[in-house]
Image 1 (cartoon, rainbow, N blue to C red):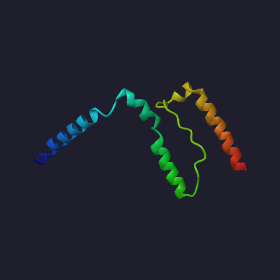
Image 2 (tube, rainbow, N blue to C red; image 1 turned 60 degrees about the vertical axis):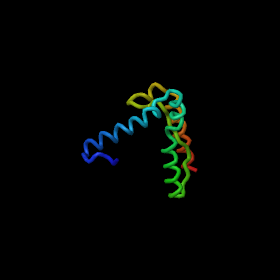
Image 3 (cartoon, rainbow, N blue to C red; image 1 turned 90 degrees about the vertical axis):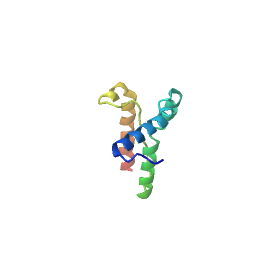
Image 4 (cartoon, rainbow, N blue to C red; image 1 turned 180 degrees about the vertical axis):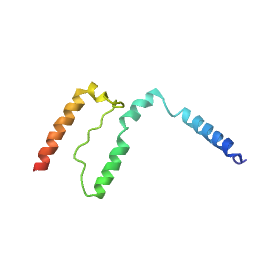
Length: 96
């Protein structure tokens, strides 16, 4: 038995099958922490390969969770302080 010939029915069936398959895999509380710890891994890996292509090296990364909306960083003065100190370090490193 193949997929239904109607595009709408096929799309609905595919969506429902994906939902059924993923229902048990997403939003498990015990896995949220594990996934949250890896939230930036893909972006960092992409940067690493991009810089490898340019024969450059990632000097430092400032990646923070819980910064989803405008003004969220104001709730974390330690993030702002680290960004400020890193900017000073970077400026000094550029001067040589």
